[in-house]
Amino acid sequence: MDGEGKRVIVSETPLRISFAGGGTDLPEYYNDHGGRIVSCAIDKFVYVIVKRRYDDMICLNYSGRQTVDSVDAVEHELVREAMRFTDVDRGVEITTIADIPSEGSGLGSSSSVTVGLLNALHCFQGVQFSARELAEQACEIELTRLGKAMGRQDAYIAAYGGLREFRFGHDGTTTTRRIGLSSDQRRRLEQRLLVYYTGVTRKANAILEKQREEIGARRAELDTIRKLAETLANDLEAGELDSLGRILREGWGAKRVLTDGISSERIETMITTALEAGADGAKVCGAGGGGFVLVVCRPENQPAVREALGDYHELPVRIFGMGSRVVLDIHREP
Image (tube, rainbow, N blue to C red; front, side):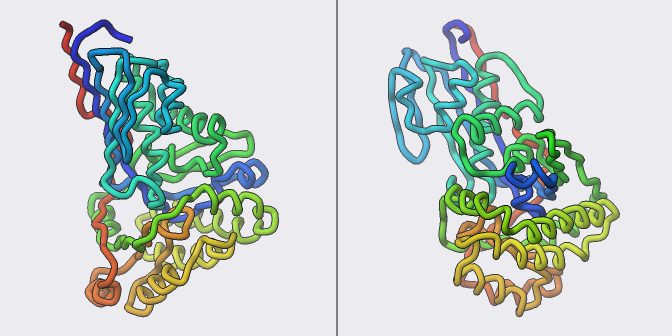
């Protein structure tokens, strides 16, 4: 690490909403059939603060607190592996703060934490990596080193930001393109997005593990989900926003049967209530089972939808154009 002196780094990493393609970014599917995702970063964030300590101890602040004398003793697995990856092994205090529940939200918070940790710790070490490199490093930590059952999209959209299409190839490569919208198109798209908290968090890993095991039996549904993502990417690029609601409805119809636990009575009630009140489409965010529900609704129908879903907390969101970034870097020599 650098010599003694004051060092404080703060990274800001966006959460995300996935519109279409969820599940096709699991390697058990895309290795054989190729995957496709359309998602966007939103203006809700994970912040990682890295501060040099006066001694060689490691102090962690997250939903818990821990002070240890070695990386091997760090209980938070994402922090531990990010420290190992970046060779930060002593004399540091790391704090993570999230705008929403940091686990089980369906908004990609786990990968946002990992990408944000890597970005801040690399900066602490005096090096910088591209969005692609940060995404690949996060996938290496979460999928390979920790063996999590999860897709690749979360790390990529956290690193890149904006509204994007991702393609996952048979050979393991990932390509991305920003979906270009005019300022007016972007504003009209944002106006249609309503996000509601189910009041329930869940661990995505268990749901995705079961989904991964059943991919062979759900090939037809996943093929449909992939094709819907392709259609949506092309429609949005052409400025056609009206298909989003239909694609959400059709995508949810295919996704909810991929495995047990994706839907629930509460989720079904929220989605049915929104559609009956005039929404164009709705789906659960992320792996399912809880977290947040995305509702797409034209502005003229939103008063009725908001009244119908009045028992649930609404999370206002806008599309965020940037990915993970260091927003503060204080470095003073003694």
